[in-house]
Image (cartoon, rainbow, N blue to C red; front, side, top):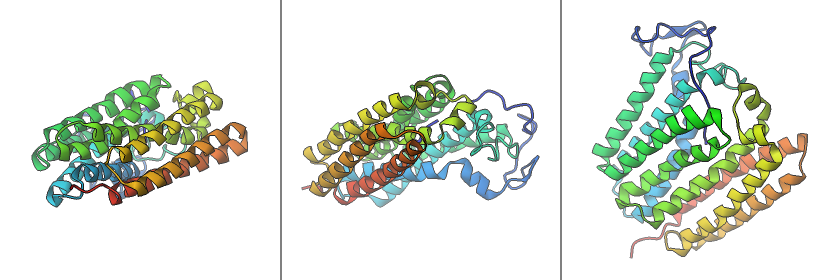
Length: 325
């Protein structure tokens, strides 16, 4: 998700460089703590988010293609999708720099620590996103996939990050909308329209995200509280959060069943997705008995299981895609 935080100007103690005036060379950028490494530029695009979402974009593409794949078109679609997502995550870092500086797990990143200029990060994100949209339009030759990418970028950067993430418990819901766009991009790049299959692959990832992210939120609740992030566990408590998690996990089961019922994937996917879905439901309900340290352990297990769930079902969605007759 994943999904989410805030933005205004960086705290006055951060070394940001001369915003708007200095041209920053990636190979020589230096801040208060020394030179920025290539690894830090790599981390700036949040590769974990890129990889997991690219996996779902690939699954969406494959379901729509039904094994009849134009490999060059697939490469262009994945490249464009990755660049659009990278642009969004970099802009997310730009907007979240102030809150990242307050959280232990993010305060040493290149931007909040002052080793990168906010101005450079802003333009880096804009350029990545623009190139990604260009690849989807000219390389994948899909105006609809390009539009989906643009909408996803807009929702992620402006609606989620710049607005809801810092103001409302609904931030996770809004973030899940943008987070569910990658499989939609992949699907629409092939189909050229938004049909039932597109809706189902969108719902699959949309419903997966809130329980995944809230599990992390419960684990790191005090960090989010200290940063002023109005996440549901922080504002409403873990009991209300667990109720919400159950709602999303329960709804995932019929969505995965419908993918088979309407002929997009086969029986193997149906069996495995139902078993995993019901297991996740059981784990979610079991969380109501967990308190204190046991609750943290439960949240960690929920988080890890959500990753297993997404990975296995994305792979099976490809392997068990129904071929064209």
